[in-house]
Length: 427
Image (cartoon, rainbow, N blue to C red; front, side, top):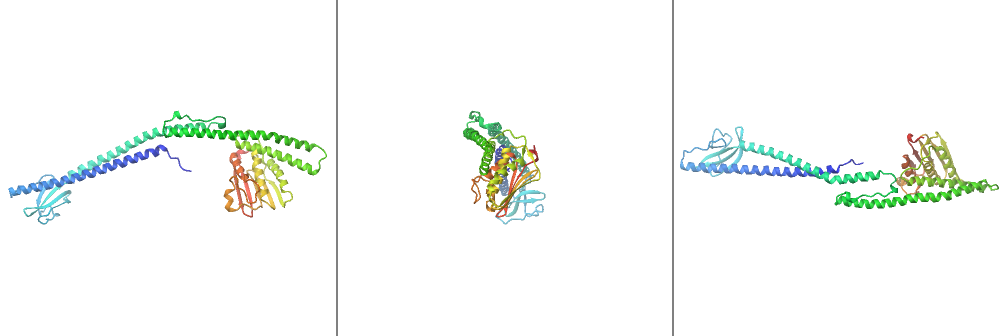
């Protein structure tokens, strides 16, 4: 399961990142341009002073070089500049060097053939550049904070109608009996943008979903109602026929089969109606699992007549659960009928424990390559004559009851199906 990710955070983060990147880039560009301007200003100041000193020397050979706080001139070699060597006559170069404890820009040239150097102290420039860097850092932080505030405010305006829509959908989804009234969303309550279009399409989908849900609900109720009457008539007729004297043994067996199958059909109808409803009908106050097993076993025994199969039932406990009897019968009968259909000889053993029910057979088993498919609808074995709905119905009923269904099988070695229920379902 993916962790929850806030849409507001996803909207704010790009604004914050964009603001930081833009402000940081502008700060770097500004710092680089100003540093380059300062270097050129220093170079111009050194060249201007050099030309000025040459002019003064041409007027007065005894003129002294500049000796200010920032700019000083020396004839080379000079004991005060041990690391600066004279340059060849007619050449010039500017370099940044350490002079004592200070970092300076050094212009080397010559004055009337004598090696000469101008020293520009960079301390003032470095101090200014440090202050500029601090100001640019503060500006970057302020721009990032402003981007965050703008993104936060904008994300709030964008997400607010979405949150309102989520609350609206959540409120409507929590209402009971959705099939009894139509759910609609008002497009006028939302802005006329993509969110309004989403609400319009959601409302259209809600109408279609309501129609489908209503048709399914009516179908389940109508079929259950219309079929219960003939099932009841069949059961009543079978009971009357069973009480009439003079029937042969074979006729009595057939009448009993008719009565049993009619009763089974009635339970199936109740179970399908329960599965088709969102809410549960009135549950039986107590359902004896052992009684349901006896009934399902009695329904399955005729299908094993004449086959070399032994059907055994063993109970180590007799739990009584607060669940619908019809649903439990669907579970037990489907697992038993599957075992009977896929077992050609050997034994089928039904075991009941305090917290689970098992059906084990010595049938053909489920091939490994098809094992993962058997819980899907309309998937059946190669030799099955059914429609491939049994295990799918079992899975749906278990999901409805909150039970756990597990199945283990090896091809050619049989299958074991288990139903586990929790202690909280015990009546």
